[in-house]
Image 1 (cartoon, helix red, strand yellow):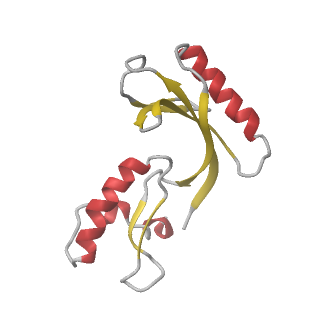
Image 2: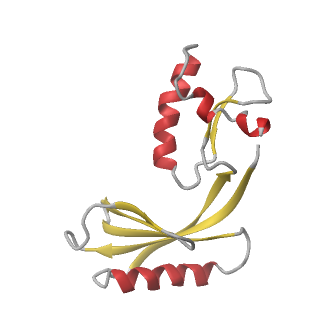
Length: 153
């Protein structure tokens, strides 16, 4: 499948509600940022991600620091960084996830890939498309998200 992978970086900073409203947003253009709030048993968090780049460049510390500096400039009420982690993004060349039958394997093999950092959206779509296909029904999204479309173009 025609996809490219990269690393994304995330920092979670403590906040006191209602310092930042519940939000999920993307701020672009590159290097791009995304942020959301999270309310967990261990506290309230401003979760800021971005600084995407190639795998294994050895500059994770710089990327985490850049995210923290960006967040502190815009959200001075944010407190200490409690968590930070890298993630992996898979970008299909047309920016749409691949959800459906695997193009090169038997018809009973399905996949969901190429989230491009939109796992919440593509996870929901996967939950709509795959059950229909598994039950032998047509899905109005099947052609649009078919992983085999990458081989056609």
